[in-house]
Length: 404
Ligand SMILES: [Mn+2]
Image (cartoon, rainbow, N blue to C red; front, side, top):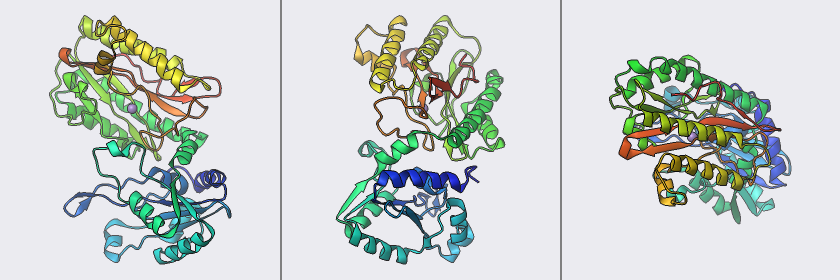
């Protein structure tokens, strides 16, 4: 159950037909990935495929013809054993979810592609993600396999990622509703553990209560591996072991959020266990003030260049005030604030915004200043989810206090 009906997916396809300008687009679903030996990870769908079909099953394909403004689904061959163990989707169900009435098998799909290649030299598909040469994990093989397959049939194969990112960047009211629900569930989780923060002995106990609250409220689970980082652990930006002791006298940094109805939240808070020292209070306060100031910059039409420039100024000002850097010392700046201030948010927790030059109404992104001082065993991050509106912005996670 996605919460969004097939008119939503059909509407998204209409926008893609416009962007295709008469061209052809092939979008493959992801395939299941090995977890170990003979088991796979829980399936996670490719976001563009889901955005255009609503189908949350592996190995399907979508063909879209911009000229005829028509779409076809290609069903995978599922053998009887897999059907019994994992279930599968029949053509009728696929049509109901997606609103696409034409469903063919793989063999017909190959004929369809060869036929299409007579009228089209160029075909668009979903290419590998931007920056993937720097990833320290293996890509879902489907993307490359489909590219290679299309290269054997068409003269030119081109990525449609940027166009899809630009469409997905502008959230529709139905999407904002889902995102708000994911955020509200996340807030409920935070409120529960905040009131108990002095009673936990290990990071994983807090993680367990967050997970319990998310699932209890209907979220599919975490939008990403939860970060529950006590003290110095918070200085490892993507710390996910969550197995250290929690004691009085330091912070726990949380970067934890739910996924609901296909959409991700992404929220960070930093809570003190016991009583804070003056220094801890100063660092947390500095992040809180910077966070407020950076949020207040956001309005439609603001250039991203100006936004990043001003947020750098604000963050550097905070670090100077804490005695952590001299003005202009870029090396110290990157040491104490090593990650980006913002990223897009949506189906993917790091949703591409399509490299915009300015903020547009309907964009949702995070604002997440942090200060990490490993020599003092202090790490603080505060992150909210911001929607650009027609007149300014809406902080979608404002209901959750940023206080320690
Ligand atoms: Mn984030």
